[in-house]
Image (cartoon, rainbow, N blue to C red; front, side, top):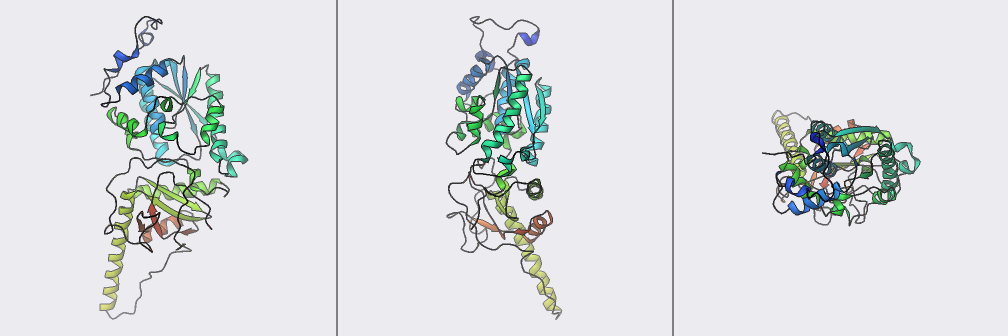
Amino acid sequence: METCIDISAKAHGGDEPDEGSGLSAVPAQTAIPVPHGLQRKLDSLVDLLLSYKSMAIGFSGGVDSTFLAAVCARFLPADRVTLIHLDTPLIGTPERASFERERERFARMGLQTICLTENPLEHASVTANPADRCYHCKRAAFSSVVTEARRQGLAVVLEGSNADDAGDYRPGMRAVRELGVQSPLMETGWHKSEEREVLKLWGHEVWSLPAGACLATRIPCGETLTQKKLKVVRACEDYLHELGIAQVRVRLDNGTARVSTDSAGLNVLQRLSTKEADVEGATRRVAAGKGSDAEVCTGAVGERADDERDDTANERADGERDGATGSEPTSSSIAACSNGVLHAGNPCAPLPRQVMDALLANGATAVDLTARLYLHGETSVVLP
């Protein structure tokens, strides 16, 4: 059972401990459950956070920013921490739901959340969608956060990048550094898998939220970003989430939707395709038994692209494949796609007719017939 200890004497109406008083965060931390082997790392993070007089956290409701806020809520005086959330059209539906859920939890724990509205599509440098789009988007977003933090009289702004992000191509980090925003999780060496472990132990549902990345990553670099395209992506992904597929991307390349998902998602799509094939086969047999010349349509829907499309190696990173469930698909569970594999050996699955119909209904002008395995760092690319 979780026990939250408030280490602030001020929070109980007294004075904060003086420097050199001998009172530190470490003894109180032992009263809160911590996964084996992570206590020392947590101590380092809390010590760093306590060194800030006051702070604003750029809070999206994702794994990283929720973990950072969760640590602050448990080990810092609540009046030293403010969460600042930017509501933008680039946030996916699962991330929106997670934000609302975690905001309510942190309110009960005494943390204030300030919500700002920002539309990155108002900036030409973002809608042009260059290779460093994330820099321009992050610069605009965190400029708003920094401005609000200063207005609130807060000493420092924090964001949730962690040690996993250090080796990736992330132009947004340049904007963060230019604005003087700090990344305490990266500084103290936290990895997302460790954050998930702690969040699970502390009862935060976000621990299992798959990496989502902003919706702009679904559009190829060089192709203009528009509100309409983002709405199509959101609607298509929402539909696939409703089928029980947690980790999914719908790339929209010049209007053509192509689906990538994890191994569990490929298995869901394969089962749907098999069920459709069984129904179609039964319909044909019934028609043949009655001597009917009725014909069941088996062609592609709309203008579906049937070319095999491989992603390139040096693509813009948009998040890791965390939180995937289920085992890797086998040759028996995943149907062959042309030569049987895509992505240099990774499996794929045929897209069921009902899914293709739904993606077209949600605004795609064409649909790739094949769903393929989502890879770490995968994003949309301009196709030849």
